[in-house]
Image 1 (cartoon, rainbow, N blue to C red):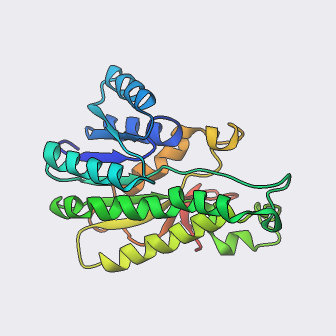
Image 2 (image 1 turned 135 degrees about the horizontal axis):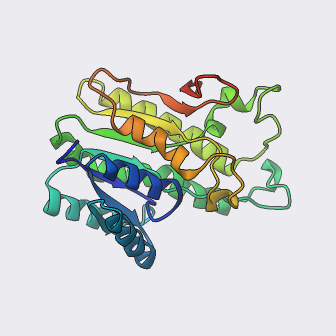
Length: 250
């Protein structure tokens, strides 16, 4: 899998970094999107030391000028983009229980800026370059907590989770994914949402039961789908399913 270029947002650590390393191991040039220059350059060095063709790209998904500059750089240096992984995300809550009744609009806006508006801004800026690729792939890193079906199952693993900002942002991202897939259904571009599962990252205080590397496998699978692969799905880790991976309900 040579001569392909992938951009991963929030790629300086966690699942994003693991995704960059795995895509790089397949022969792709990986662009490490990160808003922190020091961490981004450190990630680039580590990837290069491991044999990956990597380059740090300054990218704050909540900043329009940063997004435009990143798109301009990708065009100037690569001419096209084969894979976009919208991985950057944040978790915030208010009050001791982070309950819906404790949620402030300020927190909700901050979460949506990164988790929803960011992927839309980045995708729109890079879509012209994705269209230039023979068969581009867009992966939006979502979560099963964005599945209304899963969140409202009284017997499911998420029955005890009650919060607004992060789950609702991922539900919104799921719809964003479905709509881009519909717009691009007559093109070779495939758009899917990834559920990495509950991975131990800074996002959750490293409390997850899956590793970042395991979580990254989901994004890598969707980023390398064949021509007859699906589009417009939430796909990834499934609790209590022998196969481990599959399509999750919206």
